[in-house]
Length: 245
Image (cartoon, rainbow, N blue to C red; front, side, top):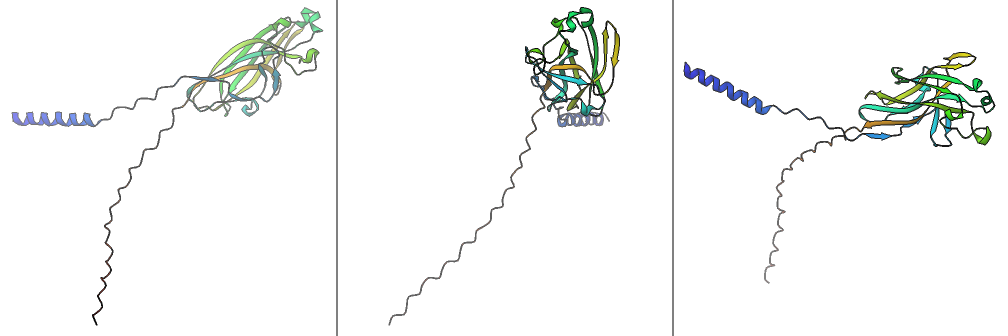
């Protein structure tokens, strides 16, 4: 009986060792490469123009609910979540005439915008609040206008650096305006009508990790060809000597 128990234990140990030998180790995840930071491909439905000082492109943010009508930011093929950054500004209409009365020139702006997926899911909101009192509060002036020096009256004021995390599954993000509140000496006004420009964005950047390269297809083992036996060609019959006359 003791001999049988020892034999059974040896058999179980041997089978367990064989099972452990046949288990394949778990595949290691491919490590992420260095992050890529670049300006994305972007569609701006209401471009405001470029700043005359920083040469930065500015884009109006319009109030809306349809992601297709917003500022569309295309995300390249990537792995993992993506970081979207941009500067959010308030939108001020500058007037030299208005600057003669500091009380009339004062304005406090609060603008809120949203980043949405293409199926209208809100990813995150961003808010910028700033006060305007003098021309020194303008971030830059926009060229291409009919004002003095060829400047536009609309200009960005205030600056809020926004950082948003975009889920890995998304390939495009839309920026749309939600609400603008303007406080002046004469009172407060709130704007929520679709299509109204309420803010400005600039300096849009993406940071992401590139996806791993596609795996090369496994090479096919060439099928060995069966050597074919070559039948030697029949020899021509030897010429017979003609009979002697």
